[in-house]
Image (tube, rainbow, N blue to C red):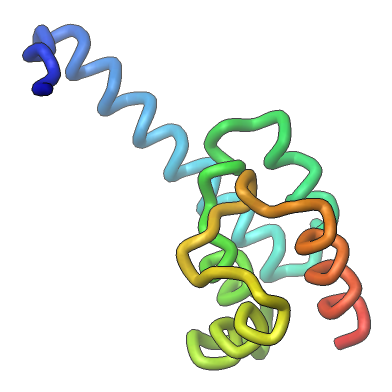
Length: 105
């Protein structure tokens, strides 16, 4: 089943919405990097904001100081979280384990 072609106005609106979502995620990652916001606050915000909820957990971890791609993947593996998981897709226990692990570090 194919999607119907978008009109020029619909395409422009979709591009604008996508750009706004990318900007929101980038600002959030910068706040996390500077320590202005915690991971728990981001997880809570992801429930309300669709753009934040679509942020991949690996991207979130990589924006923390001292965590790169390998360490982020190791953290996810230790917690039993798939590397493709997005914030909105995390379960209650996964969220709790992630916050507890990052608060200890």
